[in-house]
Length: 122
Image (tube, rainbow, N blue to C red; front, side, top):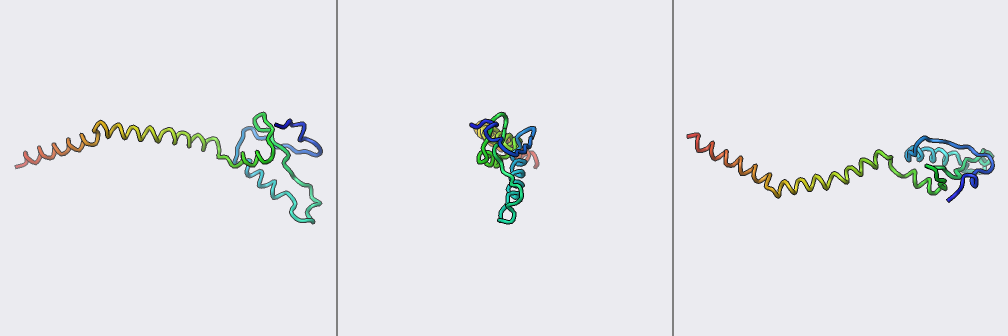
């Protein structure tokens, strides 16, 4: 675990976001990656480098930050959890309905009505 003072040496810029947003973080990392010089001619330009990030009170190193950027949004995670929790409940309800004869009773009832109507027709 790092302390902020350990990584803030020399010229430093800081960006702040009110909440952790992995897709926005991924976009920021792509912009910074493009800003890093690739050839010897561009080495005169100032180099942008991520030293660390302060995320919800914890200092994260660059590799951890890059892994965090791969996460989906909080809304997506919530939707996935709701889907995981509701699917077994729907399956259980379907099994219980079939076990109590819900479909069978309805089928036999309609068959009985059809026979009664057929006898009453002549």
